[in-house]
Length: 123
Image 1 (cartoon, one colour):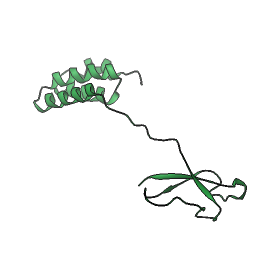
Image 2 (tube, helix red, strand yellow; image 1 turned 60 degrees about the horizontal axis):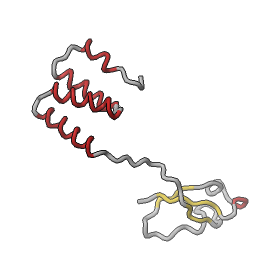
Image 3 (cartoon, one colour; image 1 turned 30 degrees about the vertical axis):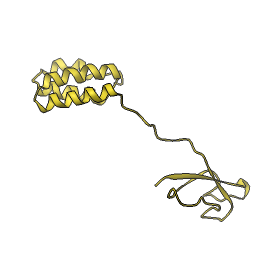
């Protein structure tokens, strides 16, 4: 169910609930509120800024992720690790970097040689 924002028609007569903008979970077919649920003063629905970021995954990332998964299923840990490592550097994805490190470990690489890979720009 969507969350809608409301604000008072007359801020001077508003209560603590409706003094600023407040949110209400409503069905899409529900009529908009006309009064504050706490004090009964008039309110109106407002257009709010979307607080969620919609991130689209590129076709390339989907293809690479699928290939990495196929390598992992086949037990080709070093192939999976190298592809994940290279792609994580390209797109700056920390989770993919961790996945690469896990695959390097499964491939039998010495943990000491992986230290340089564990360092990222966010560290």
